[in-house]
Length: 106
Image (cartoon, rainbow, N blue to C red; front, side, top):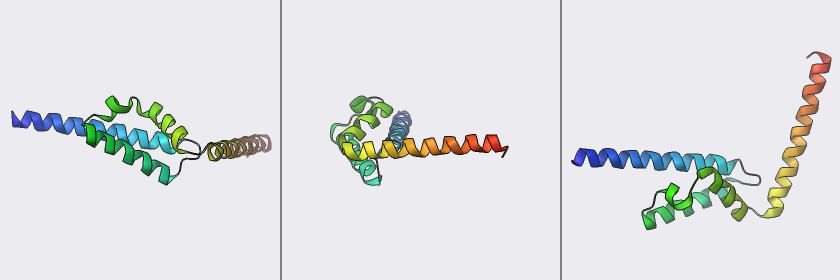
């Protein structure tokens, strides 16, 4: 019976690690999120789950959706807006460069 409990615990831990990894990746992709924001959010999730014993899925729901919520809460709105504008300019320049390469046959 102890072996079954260890297997269940190992599976639960692996599932928790998958949730945390997905959350971190999705959070890092949000506009204006830097390393400090990711570390703060991970610390908050880890602390709550340690305190309550809950799995992150039960406590916070879908990692993708929670990453968006955490970014909105932790990133100043002006920084996120500036990052979105910057990304839009970079995307537009990349598109123009690709079209120019297509026209030139490069």
